[in-house]
Image 1 (cartoon, rainbow, N blue to C red):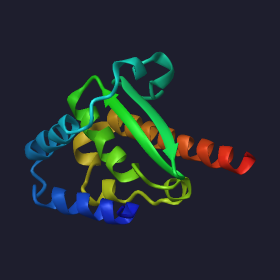
Image 2 (image 1 turned 135 degrees about the vertical axis):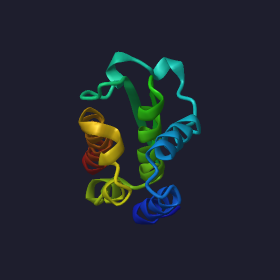
Image 3 (image 1 turned 90 degrees about the horizontal axis):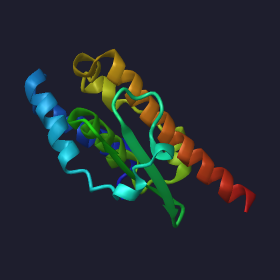
Image 4 (image 1 turned 180 degrees about the horizontal axis):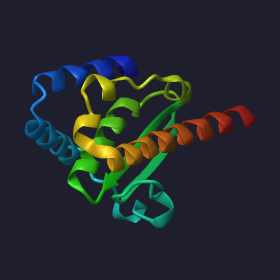
Length: 144
């Protein structure tokens, strides 16, 4: 399992191949969303909706062997691509790693240029939700 920073560096490298081309970048993000594992329809409930996203984003998490695994989906292609990046980075990581990580890939790939303010807020909400899951699992382990 790669560390969060190694995965971020891989993403930065992939996006650098697009050479800042906005159209190709948006298509690539949508393509990444298509590769996201299909989320069970039973999990697409109101309680699994990430608050603060303009599009609908569903997210769940489970912990196995002290590593967190996320499932997510969205009703829009770009947002699904964005959440797939986060799932790729955080899947299989320990709660402490998720809580203490510095997500720098967004700035390195110039994400703010192609997702706009509304999606940026939604993206921040997705990150917050993933960190919330990590905190909940960490706290649960400390209590038990």
